[in-house]
Length: 484
Image 1 (cartoon, one colour):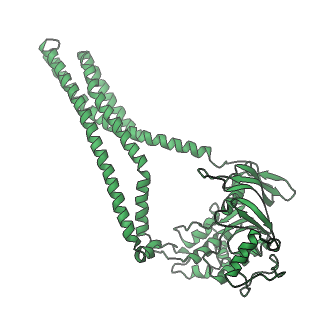
Image 2 (cartoon, helix red, strand yellow):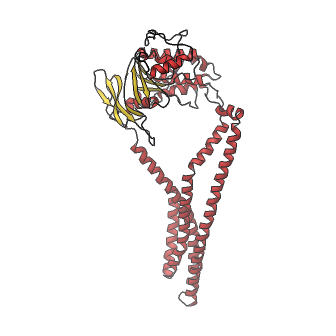
Image 3 (spheres, rainbow, N blue to C red):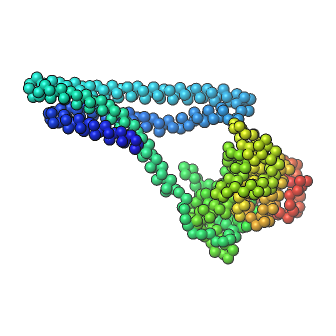
């Protein structure tokens, strides 16, 4: 916009000089010059506005086309592209969407041609009238012939500059529209920005509590959480269970400070009982206390070392700690056996790229969380892609972290693991409907947790014996333990 503004300024100065010349030759010539300029200016603004609206309305369409191309060229979809003939569907969709884009471009071209024709016709008529006025002044003696020649040169120079002015104003106006969108986006971002400062957290933090927390996603029909109260102490494993869509993941995001509740409060409580509300807390300190292993954790197109060390992205990489975290997550041997070791890019498509399985990625994500060494760990389905032995080892690792003083919040449908948790919260449609130890919940006849556990156990042909419910985290999971 600065570059275009300089260009517009240069042309305007030149036109102003020509206008002064015409006005000094005869006052009637200046309005005629403005009559030439106005239609072209109107056409430029109209065209820029039309192009802008088209871009805004078709932005999702263009993104969808780019997404189709990404699916067609990335290795993760190769199996379905071939076996399911998904490639045929994607290509036909790409061709159809491209035809729609082409039709929109034709529409814009026709509209542009119509606007240019109308603006050119009015500008041409104004030019003809201007030269007619000049001829009349010459024929009636209103202007000497030599002065008329000077006027012709001034008019031709102004017309050429006018064409340049229209082109640059057109682009400048279009950029201005997008600048307005950028300013609106910055304003919205500022209104929703995470505060850069706040009340310091107690040191050390003993537990995190929610009291009557409710949260509704923008545009949702109803709340995802309804007056939820939980306690997450350090040195314990707290499990969140429930059906899909019951609010478990949303609750972990609230606990992590990623979402602020619409009602209720999240408290960070210190050893001596002092507490700080999440809304007032220094959010950077909150995030420093939290480690995340989400169900859909990012698989960065970077080296194996970077994928682990990014767990503490604000600190210099410590390769000794990277290897230690990988060893604890049972992925050290795998990474060091790759062709380029820790410098291997864990994504196909690069020179040093390698392909990892879902379970291997899950171990790498676990190593990332362990590298962070945060006091509060929020893990969401951390073993969904692991084999049985790796799953058992992963859960044992979580129990050991709790024994070391970490707070572990476990979201999982593997109820064989939740039976060892220190406290279990059962969510249903955004509300806490049951809570307690595994033994407490199994003793509630007709309870939601008992029903889920029994149904899952039945898949293995196992029925809980009366009075024989396993104790909560009394024994560590082992490779030969029989459980659902």
